[in-house]
Every structure is written in C-alpha cells, then in structure tokens.
Image 1: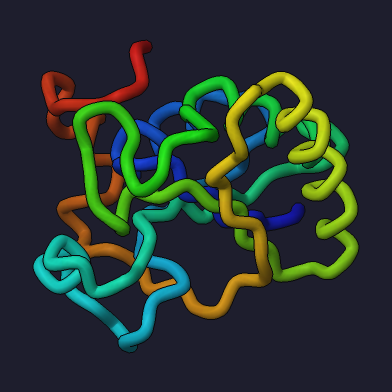
Image 2: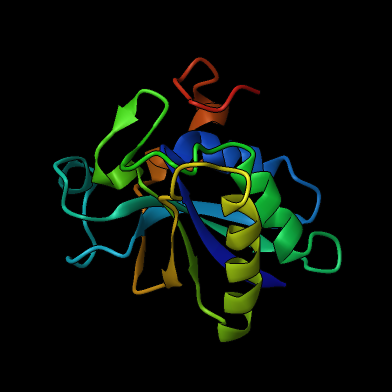
Length: 155
C-alpha cells in the first residue's frame, strides 16, 4: 500500500470520490502544509494557510499513481487559484503532496501531460508533504453522514 495527499477544494466531496475508486484502501480528511500545528477547522477557515486535503491510501497494483492522478484531475479545475466550485479561500487550493521521493517524477509527468491540455497555467501545487493534521471527527466521511451536503463534485 502507498499513500498520497490530494487537495482538491472542499475535502468532503474529494473523500467520497476517492472512497469510490477501486484500489483505494482508506481515506482521511485533514489539513496540510500550513504554518501552525494541529489547527482547528475554524483556524483553517480563517485562512490559516492550510489546504483541505485527503490522505489517500491505495494499492498501486490495482490503482497506479498515474491513474489515481488522472482521476483526481477529472474532479478539479486545475487552473483555479484558491477555489473549487463555490468554495473560495487558500484552504481550497489544489495540491499533490507526497512523502516518497520516487513519486515526484510520476507527479511531474502527469502534470506536464495535464498542462498540455490547457491554455492557462496550472494552479496545482506539487511538493513534499510538510505536515498533515487530521480534521475533526465530524468532517470524516461527512457526505456519508450528510448526503445533502454541498459538494463541487457531482456524483
């Protein structure tokens, strides 16, 4: 099993989307690559600098990273800066955060291929994971608990 951290706007919908993909073994929503330790949702919402992110554990034999990234790209606007759908703010930026250096070339190649499909520059961050703090329990699997909750991803 491998792990990648994907920020794609509001983490509720992203978590539900990734949970539906064959090869995804588990997900957890949280706050990544921000300046303070263990932020609360209220701090993140007040633009503390973290990205709403989904930790995705996956089986690369079933779902290779390149395929997982293509699935991720299909549910975000990769040119949008600090927003997805109706959600705006730095916490809704897009990003790919990795912990294994061997993932970097795969990510670079996928982003290069994606950029060729757009006239605008991509706004997807891609860098090593600096930190990840799990979100509060009420955010975990939120759309399973609240099926009518807002999401920029249409299921």
